[in-house]
Structures are given as structure tokens and as C-alpha cells.
Length: 126
Image (cartoon, rainbow, N blue to C red; front, side, top):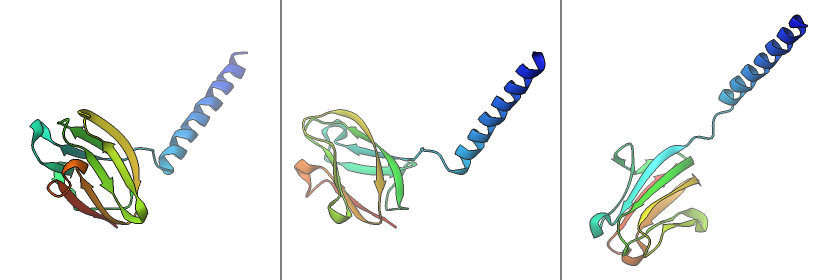
């Protein structure tokens, strides 16, 4: 009986190891984090950063947006190619929201809908 149990345990361990290797080979569902801020302390300022640096260009792919909206008078929205539009936050929300988005090649604009002429930025996805 012990040998049958040992054989089943070894086979199970081999299957688990095979699944782990296969998952690594096909990639994981993790994505790069982008940090957006708008209206910190009610300031008329909006930013989008990756690793502490302003986003100017990105490779096409999946990104996790973490948006910090510091004011009830501001919002954080993103427009892109082919009619893409995403409102991460809206007036009067204040807090943090997270969303994972697949970005395709093209030009993007992030902005505060209430103050778009003053609070905006651009980046390109290639």
C-alpha cells in the first residue's frame, strides 16, 4: 500500500510542477502599474506616472491604472484611439480606484472632465 501511495504522491507532484512550468511559459496575468493623480489638495494638477516618471510612451499591452483622486471637484478620464473612453473617477468622488485596461496602439489623452482645458496630459502607445 505504501508504494501505491508514494506513486500517486509523486505523480501528483509532477503534475503540479508541470502546471507551474506551463503557467510561467505562457506568462502571467500581472500587468504594469500606472499611477494617476488628480486634484491632490484641490490643486489643478493631473499626472500619470510609471515607476515615478511621467508617462510619454508605452508599449501596447495590459496596464493596471491606480488612480488617486484627491478632490471632489476633479476627475480622471482617459480617451484613446477608435473611440476608446474610460472614466476612472467622476465629480464628486474622492479616493482611489483601480482598473486593468488593455491599451492598443495610438494616441491617448488623460484629463479632468471638469477642467479639461487646464488639466490634461498625452501619451502614445506603440
